[in-house]
Length: 410
Ligand code: HEM
Image 1: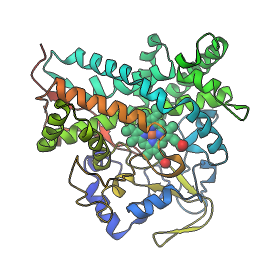
Image 2: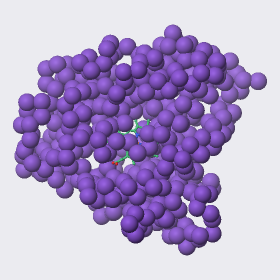
Image 3: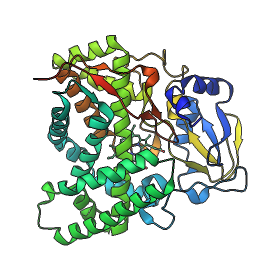
Image 4: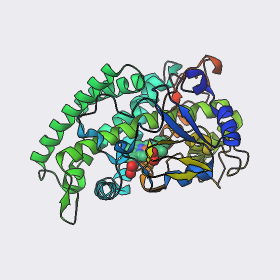
C-alpha cells in the first residue's frame, strides 16, 4: 500500500481485505499502526461512532506501532484546531457557526462565477487541440474558486496556488517545503482576516465574502476568534482543494474509459437534461472517489468493530474507496453506472463530520464535466492508461496528469 503502483488500482486488494480481513491492523510507512475498515456496514458505523475521536491527543503510542500521528510543521500552530480534528461540543459550536456563513444560498449564488472560471480555463487551451487536464484545468479551478469564495484578492491567488501545489506535491514527502508553505499561508491568512475585520461594515452583508461572513457569524452571542476564522479558512482551502481536483480528474478519466456512459451523459447534457449529470457525479464519487481514506479517528475507549477488539488509543482509518465497492451494499459495484439511483455512497463521509463543502464540490464537478464535454465533444485520452501516474499516499487518490487530445475549438 501507499506506493503509486498500488494507487493505480487499489480495488483488488480492497476486495481481498473486505472478504478476509474487513477490520485489519497494518503498519503505515510512517511506522504508525492503524486499523483499516473496508466493509460498508462497519465503515458507516465507524464514521458515526462517538467513541472514535478526531482529536490526535487520543492517539496513544502505548499499544502498537512506533510513530505518532502528526501534521507536518503544525505542532505549535492553531490552524490545526479545525473541524476535522475536534469533537463535540467544540465541533458542534464551530460547525454551527461556519454553517451560518457557508450557506447553500451563498454556494448557489456562486454558480455564475464557477461557470465563468471554467470557461476561462478552457479558453486558454481550447485552440491547442491538446492539454493536460490536471495541470491546466482540474488543479486551478478549485483553488481559484475557493479563493474567490473566501475573499482572497485576485492578485494574491497565484501565491495560494503555489502553496497549495506544494502541499499536494509533497503531502507525504519532504516536510520542509510543506511546513514553509503552511507557515506562509498562515501568516497571509492572519493578515487578511485582520484587514477584513477592520473594514467590516463597509460592505453590505449580502455582498460580503466568506471570511467576512465567518467574522460576522454569531450564535447565542458567540463569535469565532481570529484564530478560529484562520483555521476555518485553512480547512476550507485544504479540504476543498485536492478533493475537487481529484473529483474532476478521476471523474473525467472514468468517463474517457467508459465511452458508452460518456456518450449517454454527453447526449443528455446537450439535450439540456441535468438529471444524469446529477446522478452521474454521485456515481463517479462512488466508483473512483477523491478521498480514498477518511481522516484519522482514535478510540477513546476499548471497542469492538467487525469482531475485532480495538484498544483505547488505537488509530482507525475508514477506507471509503473499499466501502463504496462493497457488493453487500451496491449491485455490481465494479460497474460504472451513471444512472445508479440506490447510491448512498460514503465519498463525502457520514455522521457529524459529513463534508461541509459537498454543495460546492457538486457545483464545481458539474460545471467542469458538463462544460468540457460540450465544448470539446471529441475529447480523448492521449496516453496509454498504464503510462498514467497516480498520486497515492494517505487520504487522497488522484492522477498526477491527464493528457488529452481533441479537435481544436475555432
Ligand atoms: C469533510 C470529502 C469537497 C470542506 C469531508 C469528509 C469527506 C469529504 C470524506 C469527511 C472526512 C472524515 O470524516 O474523516 C470531500 C469530497 C469533495 C469535498 C469527495 C469533493 C468532491 C469539499 C469542499 C469543501 C470541503 C469543496 C469546502 C470548500 C470540508 C470540510 C470538512 C469536510 C470543512 C470537515 C467537516 C467536519 O469535520 O465537520 N469532505 N470533500 N470539502 N469537507 Fe469535504
